[in-house]
Structure formats: structure tokens, C-alpha cells
Length: 235
Image (cartoon, rainbow, N blue to C red; front, top):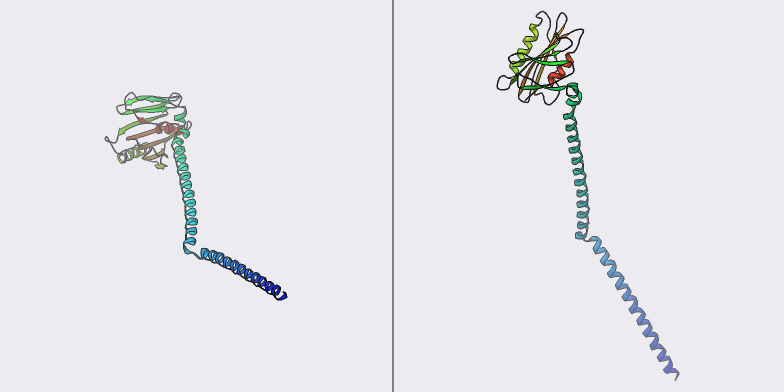
């Protein structure tokens, strides 16, 4: 009887030991498989390349967006600067702001006249803007189309006219007109016994203009004449 009990106990012990060994081997196999899969994923070139490509694409997209934003900003600034530049002549020239638009009766142009100045015909192809307070202060206006003359001829002509006002004096060349509307411009000045004579030749919008300004020392209104002269346009 005792032998049978001992044999049964031995069988149970061996079965338990085998079950335990099977469980350990199964766990170890599962752990090894999981570790192997993780390592393979980390070392997989395809997975690594995909991640790198995604990061590169995101960086390039961000850079392109930044570049486009900068270009849009530059374009906006350039447009604003151009608009401001186009407004400057009007804002800086008192004749355009305070003058009266006047059409020549004998020639094909119009001009803005400041208060206390009038326009009258002098002779064919020549008008005069004069001060109503002192008619010794005046500006002769001559206008031509680009078919009638060219700027070089007008420039040389006005230079000779100014020099002829005082042959013994030194002719001075002044800075050219500023502004995109003036294709070409030349200014000359010479002193006289009681003042000065200023000559201008300029070209804009297919019109070539010659101005001869006679000013007196005590008056000093050459700048007013120049401002009015700049506003001449064909009509």
C-alpha cells in the first residue's frame, strides 16, 4: 500500500516539474520574439528612410512657406513705395496743391498758376506767366512736340539764351528736376545787374518745354516760377 502511494506522489511531482519547464520555455520564446521584432524595426532601412523623408518634406514645406511670405511682404513694400513715390511730386509742389489749372489760348498745353500770376500770349509759340504785382517778374514758356524738336536742341538753345542775358557773367548749371515724369531736364542760371535769369529745358510725356525766368533780387520768386513750370502738360 505504501509503495502505491509513493509511486503516485512521484508521478505528480514529475508532471508539475514538466509543466513548469514548459511555461518557462514558452515565456522565453515570446520574449525573444518580441525583442527580435523591435530590433528589426529599429534597424529596418525602409522605416528609417521614411521618417527622414517625412522630416525633410516638412522642413522644405516650412522653408517654402517662409520664402513665399517674405516675397509677398517685399512685393507689398515695393508697391507701397511706388505709390508713395508717385504721390511725392503732387505733395511737394505748391503749384499743384494751391494753383489753378489754366489752359493756354494759343498753344496746346495747360499749367497750374499760383495766386497773383496770370498767363498771356506773347507771340506765336510763346506765352508768358507774369506776376500781377510786378510785371517785370515773368517766365516765358515755349512748348514743342517731340516731332518738332528734340531735347538736345532745346537744351543748347536755352543755354545760349541765358548766356546772352549777360555775356560778361559766368553761367551756372543747376541740378536737374527730380521726378520720374521728367525724361530729361537741364537748368542754367546767370546773374544780372538787378537780379538773375534762369533757363530750363525739359522733356516729359512727349512734350519738350523751354522756360526763361526773369527775377529781381528784391523779389526772389524764381522757385514759384519753377514750380508752375513743372506742371505744364500737353492737352
